[in-house]
Each structure stands twice: as C-alpha cells, then as structure tokens.
Length: 233
Image 1 (cartoon, one colour):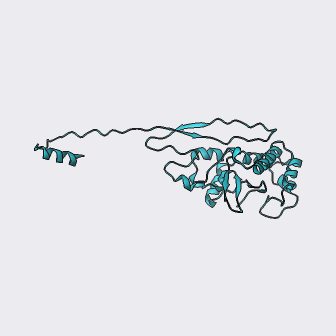
Image 2 (cartoon, rainbow, N blue to C red):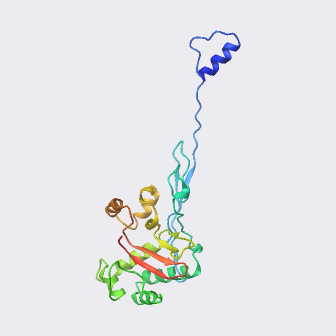
Image 3 (cartoon, one colour):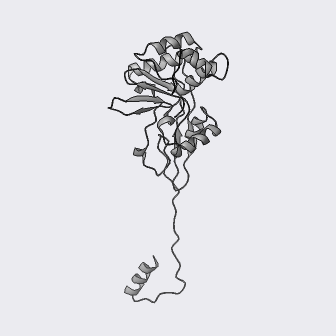
C-alpha cells in the first residue's frame, strides 16, 4: 500500500509527507453455524425410533464451516467417505435385514436372532476364528452371563451412522458404524462424541496405535445378506 501511495504522490508532484498515516485495515469476521446430526436410533415396524436433537455450534472466526459430513474445515470432502444416517437410503433388502437384527437385539430375543442369522445363504462371520453354535458364541463373548451386553452392542452399532462402500463391485456393502471405514485421525470433536457412545477413550487410544477400527462392526450386502458382526482387525 505504501509503494502505491508514493507512486501516486510522485505523479502529483507532491513531496512524501513524513508520518503519512496508514490506512486502517478492516477485518470482516464471518460467522456461520455447523449442524451436526447425531445418529438417531432407527427401528423396525414395531420399534419406535428415538429422536436425538441436533447439535449446533458456531464456526470459529476466519474459518469456513465444516460440511455436514463432519469433515474438518479446509480438508477435501472428496477424500472422506459420505456418512449416512437416513435409513431411507438403504435398499429394501438391506433395510429389512437391519430392522430384523435391531428388533432381535432390542427385544433381547436370541431365538429371533438365531432365525435372522440362519436366514443367510451362508453363516455370517462372528469371529476371526472358528466357532461352534453362533448364539452360544455370542453369549460367551458377552460381559454378562445372560449375553445381554452383546445384544446392546449390536443395537448401538446398528443405531450409529453408516457408510456405503465398494459401490459397483462384488464387495459392495453397507457398514455400521461408519468409523470402521473412516480415517480415525480425521474425526471431528462431534464425531468423537458419537464414537464414545460405542467405545471408551482407552479403546480409541489403542485403535489410534493400529490405525484401524477394532471394535464391533456390521456389514450387510446390497442384497440383504448379513456378512459379519465381528470385532477385531
């Protein structure tokens, strides 16, 4: 700015005045809001869906508000998978399997869950090693003697946001929670709050060391086949 002023004064034949005041720089503060839509617990025909209020937060000064997908400001949205919450975007076979699993879990109904698991053309993966009876295996891996904790984990997992991955390939699938396919080092504070509804901070610290999601996840193919409900790498 000073160089420009000197040029103008020289053209006018004026001497540069000592102590020429500088123009005050104006700073426009831009504010906006970020709307984060936490996962709403979905339900089947007989399961009421729980409404979770949206959380709003003012965007910091001099930054652009983050997109609704939850990506940090200034980062390329195309690099991050789209996080979905709308069950209406599921193909009917996927929505049906999701509703059946959730109904069995919330109803604490292992008989119903067995029927769902056996409806697959092939048994879904419940462990990275060989198992016997699937229901007995789930009960044995629950923290309580009745196996109800594992049903709670299944329900919470299915109530989280999800992603649609490997579209157009034989591996195309819908996965809950989306953290299983989301870069853990790109999670926003709001997304971490979602995540801590499923795991503890100690769990997350371990996952950060490995760089992958190690807790339970559910994968359902586009044809409605349950491929897995499994934890581990």
